[in-house]
Image (cartoon, rainbow, N blue to C red):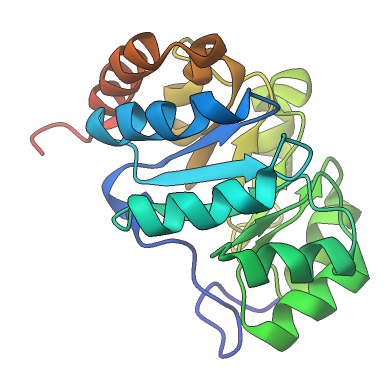
Length: 214
């Protein structure tokens, strides 16, 4: 099976090396998004995924890119190639989908855009990886659990997994300890749009996931 640095496999956002957290902002009121993103950045988050089912999603992706250039901004809940194209045109630097879809894999590979497709089985994970995914989203991670992650990683050690779905301060470190390269954290980190609380949670989470001595 091909490895993570194969030619043609787009790399994951560089910000994940400093903070292995993707903050997922979903269906929040549009005016709350920029203040929330600023607070998350201040708390140490370097990568944000704005789902395309959010109000004014494409406009907000462009605004985040313009106003917070140190953040890496991606589009989530991308279900088809047309949506992927519009998201990339708006400035999305990576794409995330809840499923493994060959149309999306072909689009991402052709455009050189990192894609993180969702998978819940070994067959889906292998199909996503062979299709050129930059990582595979274990989804829903809290339902599948650590035993499922271990069972997948044992025969598929070269696939990069990112745990998404039900991730919070109580389980994020466990998924990283079991081999995920990052975690996607949604509703808990977004704190219902409360920027001050989101910033506090981000700082606490990022600090807790930092390797000892760093």
